Image 1 (tube, helix red, strand yellow):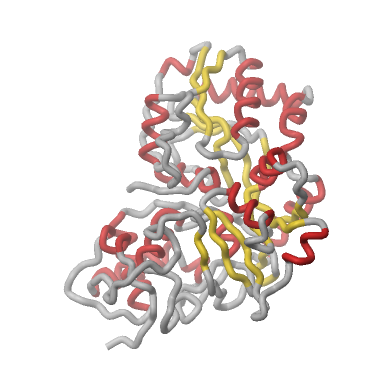
Image 2: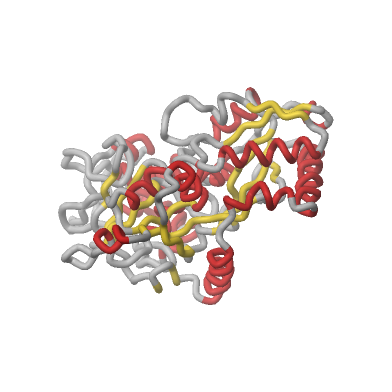
Length: 424
């Protein structure tokens, strides 16, 4: 299973698919380790600084890999396979690996240190005189919210009411969408806001907590199996740096402001009592995602209507039956027993599959589902299981069964808009 992720935001999902990762046994006792950072991470400078301080305190020399995690120059994120290759070939430990309570990697082969930066996803809006002219809703009452494609910010953004969505390919562009007026608000990884302010010190934003189970994250050190001694030395060093104030000094400018961090803790407590509450209040029974605009992204990827085919890919009855079972086990707790939506959007009806002019394609939905779902264990299913689940979604939205099984390749390559219709 090739798990595709976009930049740092969903890197933690790799823990669900990174099975047997070979590392050099020498890292257990070596006085030198190779360090990688996450590709495209806005906190890369911080991650290197923390790694230098931690490993120096632990008496371990650090060599930083120039390639990063399989840095092959593309912008489509990294996969579990690429992660495994990098840990075998380029690095012994990854600095700046994001972890969260919804992707804790308890069954992963990777090992993790304690966190060195508590951060997360926030809602930002432009501050100052220019904000008044840009933060005006359209005549239909909707505002434009920017989010980073195929990341937790997109999962949080789709819960917002009365919104259009401007999907960007990087967290930097997501912040830029607000700064340049393409969006009135953005849901974005907070270190991206810090990095943007470093590059544009004249730019100021109002920052608020993003109230969602997907919002809360920590940065840690990650390594492959058999590195318990290395991780213990890292944890011991982090404890010393935390005790003498050096860690706080390193991370001060990157940490969530105290008022936001306090709000985040309050939000997490409220989510225990009422998991359906998000930034703008309770989710609707059928959350709407009326307009998706994807900036700087190939037309073949993501949630956007691309071209021009008239037929949906075929699927058979057995796939529908199996897909229904998979849905009940892995999806219903968030999307509702009848796909009606709960703490996650509805997967049935006009908000998901309108009668005409859909902005979602079958291939876009399959790609997103197979890389990001289930939210608590992304990528855990096989290609065949995701295809069966897609068959169930198609059937429940009005498509009829046929005599040919749906394959993962056929589902992912389909450019047919998801327009529901009467079943024969």
